[in-house]
Length: 257
Image: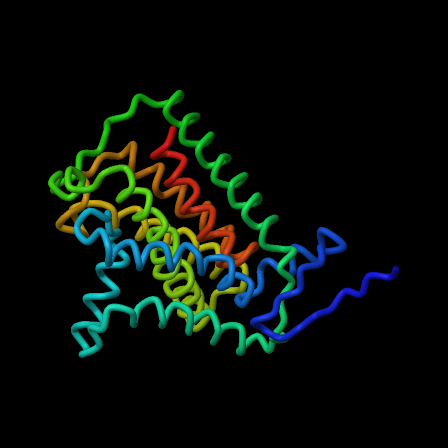
């Protein structure tokens, strides 16, 4: 009997496998597919944060974005995840992508994110083998003591989403556009935007930009700078979903291993 492959509107995703690596690469980079892919991480993080409260480790990007929204009069708890979804849907609309998705891409995206996370984990161990590390110590260790393994694992789901939202989805294109206005060519402005936002991403983990950050040391700063470049390149070439998934999976690998 002939099996018919159907493609439906959002809400009834296709379950047929993708026929080629090229189609998978294009499909998995789409904002709508990225939203569906990261939605479970977003739900797990936000609901667990409500249930576990202070026992969830919150990342700086989440705190800064919520403080900004609260400062302009929008302090509702679920507004930030809703705006995250809205940003991806708006990006999808601006690209004029079809409102269809192929669910066959999602398991492969999970595998791809795990592979990239493992690669970054290997890079971290290579750096450790080449350089003698000076371990960074949190300024406020109470925040870590109050969070158990579950709270940290849940927190890493949020870090994968909100740090990628702030530094890659928002800041990276904004800096690239600004450099374009200053006259830089397309490749040059994106290269400098990747480097600049990666420096900011690394610095954001320290006391310079966060009261609850780590004490500064060159070893961890240089690795976070490399990690920022790594995630920025993933965002540019593989989309938000792969970047956020790889970020979350890397943090989880570090916690587990």
